[in-house]
Structure formats: C-alpha cells, structure tokens
Image (cartoon, rainbow, N blue to C red; front, side, top):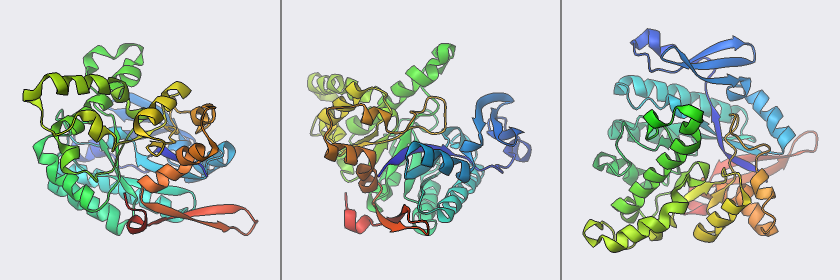
Length: 353
C-alpha cells in the first residue's frame, strides 16, 4: 500500500476575506480557467495552481496513474492566518476543516484528512482541534513552524501540546513565514533554503526547550524530511554538552529527536538512508508535496530508488508508518469491479504510540 502523507488541498469556493474583513494578507483563489487558478496574496500571485489542488476527482485520477492508494490531505500553509484576529482566523480554519472532512467522507477509501487551527490563541486552537478530531473525525492537525515569529517552545503553546498528547493527536509541522525572508527572495531560496532552515529551528526549539521531555508521547512529523534539522542535530548536542548553564533537559537533544517522524521528501536515497540510520525505519513516512512544483513524481520515487532497503522497510516507509503515526487502520475490500480498495478508520486505542 502507498500512502502519500504530504499533500495539500484548498476549497474551490474560498470566500473573499479581503472584501469581507479588509486585510490584504488573506489568500484569494482567483480562477484563470476551468482547470486553473492563482492563489493571490496582497494583490500578487503567490502561487499558480491547477484543479489538482481542489478537485478530488482529478486527484484520484493522478493517484491511480501514479500508484497511490491513499492521500493525506492538509491545508496550504499560506491559509494558516495566525496573524489575523482570532474570530476571523477561526472562520478561515473551519471553512477548510469542513471542506477536508466532506472530501474524506465522500471518498473514504482514498483520502485521510488533517485539520488546521488558529494557533495565535491556544484556547481557541484547542477547541477547534477538539472539533476536528472528535466531531469531524479528522486524523490529525497541521501547524506551522512558528506563530507570528514565536518559536514552538513559546510558553503560551504548552496547553495546546498537552491536549494534543492527551488526545493522541498527530501533528504535522510544515514551514511557513520562514526566517531570513529578506535574504531569500532571489533564486526562490525561500523554498530551497528558507523552508529547510525554518523547519530545523522549529524542531530544535521542541527538543532543546523541554517540550518533548514534558510530553514524551506527543506525535510530531516534520515536512520535507525535517529540513536541515537531521544534519545539524550533532551540533545541537555539542552545544548542550559545552553550555551546561543553558540546559533545560536531562538528556541531549538527540535523545528527544528520536521521537520525531519525518516525511520522505528529501529527493535523495542518501538522505533516506541517513534518516533511517539516525531515527529508525519506523519514523519515515512517504510524502510527495502533491500537487506543487517541487513535488516528487511519482510519489515514493526516492524510496523506490533506495536499493538498500529490504522489502519490509519499503512497506513501512511507503504506508505502514503513516498508518501508525495517524492512529488508523485500513480495511481492505473489493469494489463491484473486483478492484481492491481501502477505507481508513481511526484506531488510536489499538495502535497506541
């Protein structure tokens, strides 16, 4: 089974919050044709997209062609809207969460959904996480790497992480509002340098600060293979060793980093082998970043090209690890044409951590 853990989706009828609330930072989806659109921010094209980003039927066609059994749907980070007034940000989150839940309910054998919550207010974020998990029956939550410039070890986020651990909510952490934006506009370095560096800072904040020590059963997966974090982890350990006055944990950062999961979107078998060697074969999840330009085609290509993997390891990376991370089991059945289909069902109590 192939499960693409890292894909993005947006409602085709996204309301015009610029007209409704006045701020230019709201993302708009402006259709350019029946099969394409521009995501606009502040009057400029943020990203050109096709109907792949909103149409489940188009996605299923691509999945069938590329051999993907199930996609995990998550919002596009530009829609996080952590900067907005909380009532407006909650409205934006709920529109997307409802759309993702509806898509999953329409095609339960092909999609699993992750929600989004307004992280600028932990109390409201917890309430929406509760609705996502217990009412909408989504499988987890996607959050950004920082909240309006504050790292993920900010004290006001403690209760959110406490509840995520208590409810066994898988968290997918995706870079957004990257560091050094003023230095990375040329060459699209924001995507190739800024995002991996931003992800590293988020992961380092969680292991150094004691968040992962305080919540050892918190389930976190980082996008893009964890960015540069896996490769700078020895340097973090060295800092922990030589600066005892800065230590906030009983063990070095690498001890807590072993709890993390990572998607496989790092494009190179050498990097896949490194992730397995450092974090374990059970901590890497196939993810493609469908349907965007930097995505892996076909999904799972880098895993297929890592020739040293055993058949058992391939099964783990291509699907089984995602199931365990998301606390779900998949029921296999035959459709009316005799084809095998799969339906995801939550089983947190059975699968555990």
